[in-house]
Length: 285
Length: 146
Image (cartoon, each protein chain N blue to C red):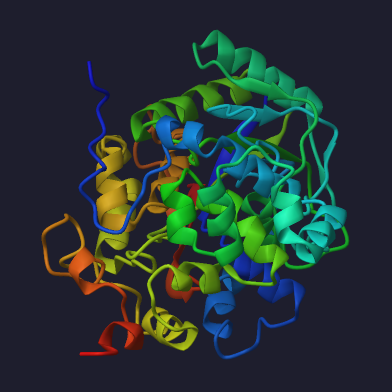
């Protein structure tokens, strides 16, 4: 039986990808940020998953305004890093897991979440920056990845509650897969940031950390945070945090085994370009 | 019955919803075309000619040529789409975001290094924070002539 044993949460700021690709990680501006992921890279080596289920948002890359799926699961054999306007990132192509992805799609749709199934899709920094942060610069990513794109670009975006419930459904779907696979689920995006208008550059350290505390200790309450709170307190792009609740909802303590997870790592840093970077690893005890 | 839009009282913030999306459809689709290197070259060679291939409004075209991102957003642009224009011109997200505040690049970068913009006074229109309409433009630009 396949199982979800850990969840990883991280921001996916494009400038972090650029810093890695241009060899700037040891510059004074970037060094404190990458220091915060040193533990995580070692943890990835020590706890290598068989598959990563990676929740992220597409930033007008695979999905233009032609089609705007709320939840899209990538069922392809591979996904190519996209040219987002300055050439593709020089990172390995992403190998998918079509069989598990199709299984999850089938199961989750039967649990009343109407996913869009995507058999051809390029992936952007939302997906590749978390992989770079957690895996460094390998010649190939350590395992297959199932991309799961959430619309947080055009309002209304799915609610935190919807995302949290979807996470629970994804856990059930994974556990109904026969092969023994160790699956990690990642929630990415956030934390506080606003990329537009006179309020650009908004950061809310206190709110971010209080939200993190709640997401860890009382995720059911955290899931009730309304959209407007994210926008008002954490900036117009801070609403990306709803994606973290998909990963959180998929952990075993939510499925009726309270106290069964622990915090392996927690990190917070300001700034990365316009953004507050948050990072967390939760793992089964 | 009116739709529930509780996000219209936040200063300096345009939420990209279905109404904005409809207004900005061609503006944003033009931006998507800049994901191809050959289109970026054609656009840079003659912006006006390239824009005239798209059924955008004259105001939208002018906002693109002026790189006036606040105007482009008001006309239905979304920041993730507009970012592709910036990328075409070699601008970072930080440069683009900063340009919408009136601050110089150095001023905006310094604000971020100091911990970013405070939310205090910037939650609701009518307070007295840095993002409020009566404090625009920000930085040196806002002090000129005073």
